[in-house]
Length: 246
Ligand code: NAD
Image 1 (cartoon, rainbow, N blue to C red):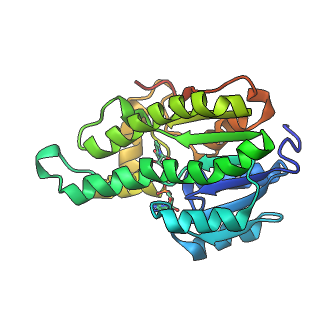
Image 2 (cartoon, rainbow, N blue to C red):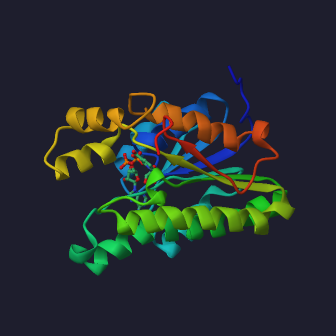
């Protein structure tokens, strides 16, 4: 439908080994991008990259500045950066250890600062870049997710500010904020609360006007739009992809 709108572009997808990241990597590659899948799980990232024409997988912990700088130096010019890697470590405030706070802030927020700082070098030089950051509906507040909600709200502030600082170089920066998407992340949440993925999804569907949970491909489509030239005058925005849920 959208043809080869990423032909000649290099796209980096962090956390691209599964879920929303893998769906995004597949869609960008289908539409002509040379996709680099960055993930902590190098073997799983390799499996995704193997399916993609010209795909490349690199093992990288996106919370580690040295690793991030090394992989971006190896990649060279980047046109599209999708800051997607994320984790949850849910707990109520009074039970949450500081290492769970730090891990979630590090993976969901600091990683975006590090990857964007590394990727902007080539983007500024070539006067072209598209950055899409993964926020979440949880940014609006979510019980048991004080760390995740703070990180994902932080992503929206980071996005708005990067759009201001990088705009003069023809770099757009936007965020998507998914609602409940059926992935390993939400399956793990179901398990943690003593539910099955099916039961947990059915409960989420009831709270959602569209009466179903989302699929990774439905988020990937919006990420690809924001990363494309069709969205050339959209910057600093957070787009909710949540089936109308509040
Ligand atoms: P997922 O758990 O299925 O995949 C996350 C990927 O990130 C994994 O491949 C994992 O190995 C990788 N990763 C984790 N820590 C990393 C690190 N330090 N360095 C490199 N890679 C790392 O998650 P998902 O459900 O596909 O979510 C993707 C993004 O979307 C996340 O940022 C998540 O917070 C966000 N999100 C998801 C949902 C949802 O309902 N699934 C809702 C809102 C937002």
